[in-house]
Image 1 (cartoon, rainbow, N blue to C red):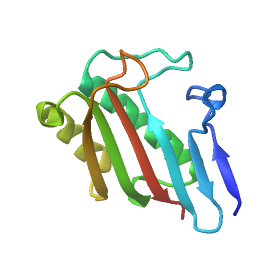
Image 2 (image 1 turned 60 degrees about the horizontal axis):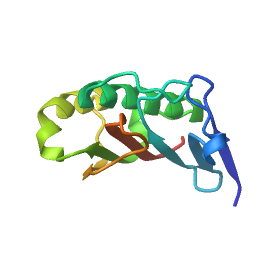
Image 3 (image 1 turned 90 degrees about the horizontal axis):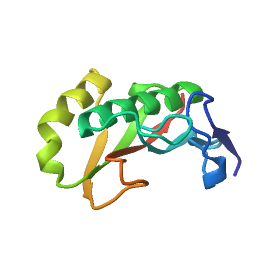
Length: 132
């Protein structure tokens, strides 16, 4: 097995945390995207709302997809973690997700959680895609 590590320079450097922003397994072409959060390059959250953080995390997911040579149509699965009860946030998150996906569809799992990487982090989005 060989893998290609992705670390777009516009995203925070995950290497001190032991992670790459994405990993492409060369034989299968599968892209595994680390959980994307609303962090700048200094690990600081940019928005204080679930919707704002979700939109930023989706944009960062798009950055990793682009770095891999993939796009939204290549997504196979999304997993969305939201601090608190997921149902409480669905009215704000669903339109952002459908806007991000456009006409593409993928498998999606939404999970309400008690905590994420920092107290200020409210949303995390991870994905699996296939690189064309």
